[in-house]
Length: 312
Image 1 (cartoon, rainbow, N blue to C red):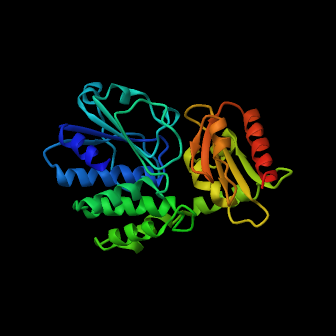
Image 2 (image 1 turned 180 degrees about the vertical axis):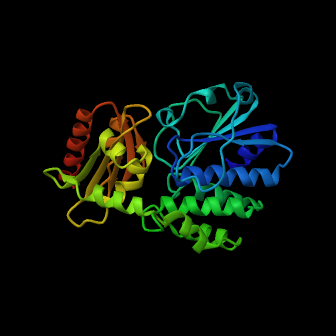
């Protein structure tokens, strides 16, 4: 599969790198890891990293691309194969479209090549492993981005998705000169405002009859704390993790951009991916999400999650 990807890269002079909207660090890490690695290997090619940004972009500004750029380009979509997760649909104009992802969804968009490894901890791990096995040079900026993607998607190597291969790949990236303390400071140092926000969030967590913990973050909550939807949605969901009595937790957040409701679903051991899929989303077996239109639908999501606790 990677050899075929290399052939496509070498046959195109323009390459556009995309990933899902509201990007997490695996999305950013895989995008910029691939960006800097391709730039180093193919300096004569035009390589564009495109998409929205947020507070997790520790890397660089995003590029812009015209419709003509898309029509001429090899477009690579990273860390998702779901149309719902993508910003716009200009990727459909691509001359050639490649998907690279580690989630368990089946694509609902057309593609020319699909590289999937659901056993990988992250898309960043997939790319780093492929580069290492191919003997490619990984520049330091790329190594940092890929390492951060792996660390973030494994919860600092805590989640079940890790394997011995994950540690081997991470170790190989560290050997390229990464300053691990500097990266962790960038990733985990928080402002006083964020600490206060987490306190306000945790103090108002609710529970279903089956001990599914949840929080509904409405527009008023976001405006009161002057915070964006993404920071609350993905950034705070795991404030409910690690509670002995809670097997599943969910974070529902009003999306200021669309008026819809972002649903982040997590579980310590119970597979819940099918719940996310039922509502049009996807992800991992125990870490997934979807987007719904009304708060009433979030109650339906909670009912499904309650039922999951009964199936144990």
